[in-house]
Every structure is written in structure tokens, then in C-alpha cells.
Length: 534
View 1 (tube, one colour):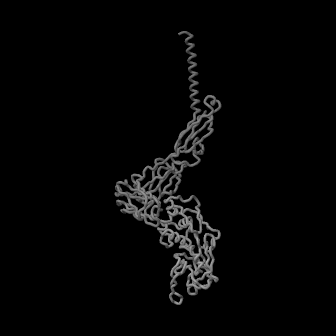
View 2 (cartoon, rainbow, N blue to C red):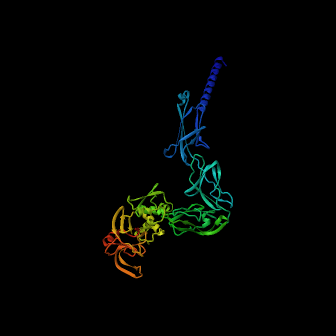
């Protein structure tokens, strides 16, 4: 081999070594200047910047619909500053500014993008066999930091000191069901609730219900029946029946659970709602001491709230007051109106007229049954073809809820009568903020005085025969009496021909001149309040 060829190989080797060194250096620079973005077992994500990578210039995160998610950065971990929902999709962008000596070759900035979902914890066992007296524990497929459990609409939240995969529910009956939701991370809200049920050991199918049997429920409350065995095995192909019949439908939520969703106005108010099962099942006995076999369970539906009744009567124009909700209006749906009947919304009443008589104002008490409310009920009953008794029974609610749903309002206005027994005696008719009439009147003589107090007109006739017993025991019968409004037993507002008015002359009634009685009578319909005062 010649000297020239050896020299060439030497320089080629040198060049190759230099190239290899440069390549290694480039690789090292690329490795040490890299940026990575990945999920993290405790935070939302973790960002790693190489030794030569530069500094983080900007971190951004966005949830659904581009909603900004503020982040905190600590030890390269990115943690949301607003609660995320389990399963919520989040897009994270991290921008790093490179050192000046690298920026000419690799660019001044590097941006990494990551799309991920907030973690979701799932219950691992929905139907459990738990020996009586043992602790009920719910297990999840990953540790959770918070749970919420209870009945629909009333979940109680519990924050756990240390994340754990199994959560004890505290003291529970031998058989039961709860809705439970969990948050895997402290920066999450709890997710959608799922039902968990437990049963004591039994050869027969055991049933648990939500709400628990024997409790009070609203007319629109959903009913869940969960069995320790599949529904088909526990009940066969037949479905339970509700007594009294309630509009709605049954559906199979899962292999072990049936749910009844009421429709319309749901179960009747002030009723006992029973579920008749096609086959007997085992249920926890009263006191939880053991199991008993039955084919029927029941709940109570409370009567409508007096406060809600007053709210609806005010909105419909049957009271001298208006009512305004403190929050949103009750939705115009049958189920919402039915539920509000037993769970009235908050709000405030106000007098419709600035000059409402003080006698009328003194009688008003929100949430309490009194003369004003009774009179309004009587007027509503009379105008809607119901038996007039002034009681808010099932028939009144059955008519009032659709009335409210349709947005109907009374157009005839509100009337009130007050009578002074002090001579000269007078009758005053007040209607919709105005005194329509003030006339001389006659009340009862000694021994047959017109009773003091406030009464509701219960009969309203243009002409009739009035009869009764005089103070001396003799009987009277007067036909052709005009413009009669009975308000207290045999006492009434009516016309009676007298030589004068303004002094006690009647046998308990309030007598009026013909013209005054004719003017007053159209206003004093059934339910109108009449106050007799000194």
C-alpha cells in the first residue's frame, strides 16, 4: 500500500469521526431540548422540558365548546383551577421558548398539544349480598377522592381524606339502594350517579326500593324497584301495578331494576300509593330484624301544601294579593306543578291594592288556613263546578293544578264587605281597590244580634223565602225576599222594606234598602268575605 493511500484513509477516518461526533451532539441537543406532554396519575397532565429545552412561555387548556380551563403549574404538573366533570374532554397546549443559540436552528418556540379526558370512576358491583349487621361498602375501579350518595335529588357529599377504592356507606338498613356518584380527583366534581343495592342472604328474591317503602314521596317521584336476582327471575314477564292507578310507565333500567316514571300530574295528592307485585318477594321487616314475604309495598303522597295553594290562588286572581317567586317560575309542566304542590317554591306575597281595608289585611297569614283562604277556595269551587265546602281536598287540587298550568285568571275581581254595628249602622262594599257602595243597614235586635266576626258567603240567590224563630218563640216566614247572600247560618245580606235604616231591627241579618241591596248583590258571590264589627 502506498503512502498516499494511507494518508487518504487517515483523513477519511478523521472526517467520519467528526461527523459521528456532530451527529451525536445533534442527537443530544435534540434530546435535551425536547418537550413532552402526557397524562398524570394525580394531576390533569404533566409537562417535561429538557435541560436545553428553554422555558415554558404559555400553558392553555380548553374544555367543551372552547371554554377556558385555568391551570396551576407545580412541579411540572398541570392542575385545573376550576372543577372538571368526570369524562370531560380537555385540550392542553404548552408553548416553550427555546434558548437563543438553538432558536436559529430549531425555531424560537415549540408547541405540544394533548387531548385527554378527566378520569371517571365506575362502581365494580351494583348488586351485593351483605350479611345483616355488616358494613355496606361500595368499590370502584380506581381510587376516588369524594363521593355523594342518597336518594335522587338529595345526595349527601363526602370528601375523603385519602383517596380510596372502597367507600363505607355508614349505618344502613339490611336491605337498601342508594344512588352514588364519585370524583376520582380532588379537582373534579362527582360524576353521574349510579344505583347500588345490597341484600341480606336469602333463597328468595329480595327487593329494595328507592325511595324506601313506607316513606313520603311527591306525586311526580320516580320509583325504583331493585331485586337481588334478575327481574325476569324475580317477577316473570308481568309488570307491577299501581293502586290507585297512576299515569306513567314501567321500564327495565337494567337486568335487576324496574323504574316507574309518573306522567301527567302523577300520583294523587293525599293518597297511599301501593305497588302490587306479580309474585311475592322478600323485603326487610319493620325494624330491620329480618325478612318477610310480601307482594305489596306502599308509600304516602302528602296533601298539597297550604302555602302552595295560596300561591296558586293568588296567581289565579282569587286572593287580594299577588305572589312572585324568589327564583325561576315553576315550569309549566304537569309534573313540575304536581311536585311544587308538596314542595312549594319560595317567594313573596304583596297586596294588589294600596287601600286594602285593614280588616282584610289583619286576617292574612301566609301558609295558614284562614278566612281569606277559605273564601277563595269556596269561590274557586263554585266557579269550577265543585262541591262548595272551603276545604282544599283532592277535588280542589285536581281542578286547580290544570287551571294553573293553563294560566287562567279570574276576571271578576275581588270583593269584601264590612258592616259596622255601631249606630248609625252601615254596610260598606269594597271591590278591587274601590269602595263601590256605602249604605245604611240594619243588624240584629237584642236577643238576636248579628254575630261579630268574619264569614264567607255560602249561598247567593236573587229571591227566596226566609223563615225562622222570633226571640219570643213564635215562627216567621217571609216570602219574596230579594238579593239574598247567606254568610252565617241563617244570617244574610238582603233587602227588606223598612221605614228607616241604620239601627238594629233585624233578627240577625243585615237588612238593606232595595236599591242598595240590588247594587251590592252581584258582588257578593259565594266565597265573598263579610266582616261584622262594632
